[in-house]
Image (cartoon, rainbow, N blue to C red; front, top):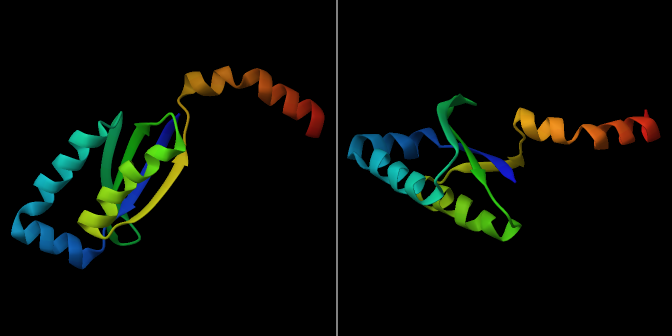
Length: 103
């Protein structure tokens, strides 16, 4: 299952990582471990934010994904399932059944 992971880095913590030069190496190490399908960086809530799309098969994988972000950056982390267009197309029959029953 594809999961979107959003990590918001506290400004002060991220500033320390940038000025010390460690932020890039640490983020690189985390990305090497996670092997995300996609990664994006931007701003949210006035802070540096990273978005990762990772594939997981079991919920027990979540600590492996989120703990490095908590420990290295004191990040605020959210995870939620996401789909690509092919996944949504595959859900079509289920959507039709739900629409029939509840729509």
